[in-house]
Length: 249
Image (spheres, rainbow, N blue to C red):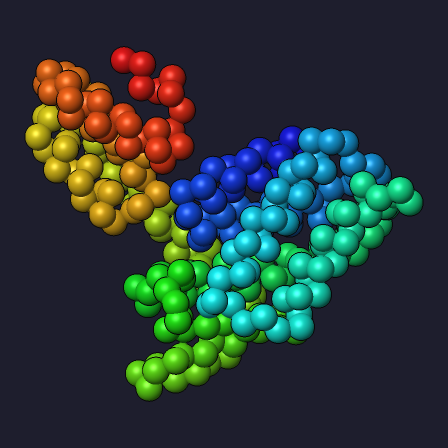
């Protein structure tokens, strides 16, 4: 239960930064964990985490890139109904919640596949009108509609997309670790200019590293006595959700 709550919290932080790919991956992981949990009742913390996860998913699903078909409406509607039942006079059951989870998890997997597909095509998911749109079906397929003549419409198997994108996600994480480890070594060896250049590259290639990079950038500016630049970097890190205590050097 604690692991589920922590994963949803991480997804919430990514949601504030509009890192929707990370949000969906984390929520998918959280609900796959929840589907295996042997819980017989909900406490307030678990309920709040479940509802937060549902709300993030529902808000992302409102984006124009997702076709509002019957499956999407049912998957979200059943999850919301199961959660709302717990705060109604009649009260809900865990069985209702578990019954709603398989469709909800499939929806998350399809949405995750869609945002990864957009990443690979170097397209934004919040463009309106969208260049590509996606329909997630109850039988586990992701229909990809191209609103131009350049890309033909496709139908992809969600399970296969999930496996493919998980592999890409692991490679991306390895790439991120490379940037952070190299930056740490350059800073430790006082190769500050090289480190600042690497940080710029890291932020260009991995938007999710921006907060971490701004903290390192701020620390280096302090060492170089560039105080105004240090404050600016720390402020940017704060805006991106990095905790204040990490900037108390």
